[in-house]
Length: 275
Image (cartoon, rainbow, N blue to C red):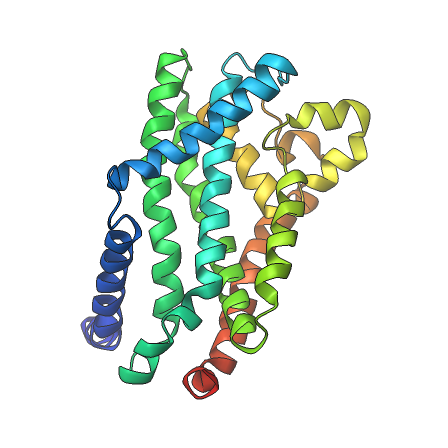
């Protein structure tokens, strides 16, 4: 065991050092020259939340019966910002870092992981704000809060798998950037972020169940359920009676990661040559 641990440490130590430095550099450069700096990690999602709150809660009166529905809305917005940022920056990461790939030899996947880690840091900051909002809104936390990290890990796995696939395609096919922007908008409106899932369920019960088969919708609803309100927020576990069907979004997250790793490793050796 000691020998195995030493071999793993020796093999991945250099990758870890490069990853650590890339994450630090990217996070510093992101807000370089900005007056508010890192505060934009909190201000931007709060501004978007304010717009959504006024339009969908105050004017259109959207609610799922949750007493803390504004917190549910804020959490969905922050989780979506993470997924959009992780896949968007991950998609461009290899091409944007092409100069480093041609000069320094290190595992190419580190670049994509560093891009998603930057989004993960922003999500961590936003989660602190969400917790503060939840407390101020009188949210009654239960033991299910302990399950929240597992929801975030699943979402990160799915986002990383998508980022690996997209970054590989982008090296060969630059049009994927514009295609992904359109697909992202479709995913956004097909996910209960700005509207409650109960609205879809009341009108189209079958469609609401199909929506929950998406790893994004499933993780969003599970995270809201575990943190904010385990009584009113619908999840795939209380909407679908078949346990095997309930496991589909979890399996899809793992499948996307495995597929992303396979495709990326297959083509990564030619990245520097193509660019």
